[in-house]
Image (tube, rainbow, N blue to C red):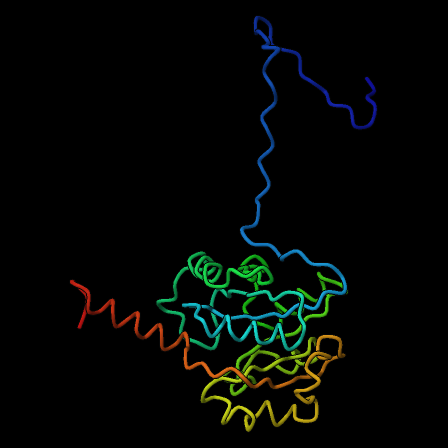
Length: 242
């Protein structure tokens, strides 16, 4: 017997067996829906990327992003909540979903999107995250946002020179770190690529490598200090260690 291509052969019931005409085939397993996606975007947008553990998120995070958004005339800022920073001790790190939820509560801004998409991509380093976003969001003008404290250790990041070649970078001043950030290894190596602060609005449309240092934010808050306070409070609770 010949069958047309794509035809399905249905076995006849065994003798004595009954067939339920209302019985349907078992449904195919539902596809796995990712918890986090790349936020909505379109070509031509100017989007700042702000990565971190956000454990916990605090007002200085929000202030830095709003300063960068205003000075660079960004359409949106994406907070990339990482599963864990390879350069830091992640023991005791709050679960990703909790940190994403806390960051969303804090940000609560119409132009800020908070996502844990790095966990879905399956990457550990900022370079791989940025490369993925650049390749999957053609036409978007991305800018990497970092605090002055991160500029000090930037040369220790995986493929940090590659990051500089993928997207322009904006460094936001911090109380204290700015005093030594400009003298850091990375700042000295990238010195000739720095543009004047008065030209900051042009940064998203510049071809990398290019970066700018923004002054104006003087917040003493840090997630490291807040985590230390949180841990101290836990130890002082009944049953906690002293």
